[in-house]
Length: 172
Image (cartoon, rainbow, N blue to C red):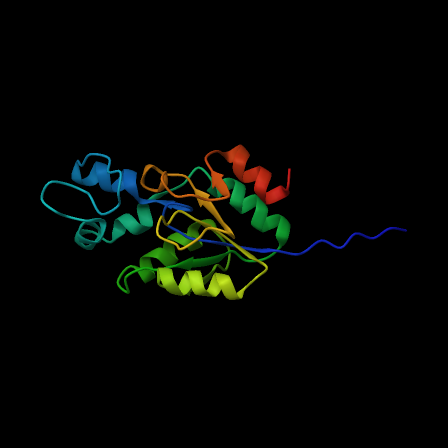
């Protein structure tokens, strides 16, 4: 009998832009145009943090991204709780945790600043991060969820569609 050993990879997820889609609820609530950068919200100089601070319920009410159902299936197949690596302002954390628990059983959270996230990823050699952040030094083990604000990022894996995500999750 031939046994093939596969390298087991842990896949971890960012939340905003990967799992949770804050842009539509913010745009509707405040009647704003669609930004190409998450810093640019309107001509008054607001950013997403200013707008969320006006109503934290948007963090819980935000819809999931188009990828969540497939990620839920993957989590069920792997029989591991989802591990979320994200940087959130402290006042966002309880609302973000509430949102995640609507979609995932027993999520594990690591609250990491982008540079901490990157450094941890470098240490955990068997880990893949599914992310949308356009500011990492390199994207060697990052599968980048494509958005207008990260189109200029050079990466080996860019996820634009559910088919792209399925192909990477299941190796097809």
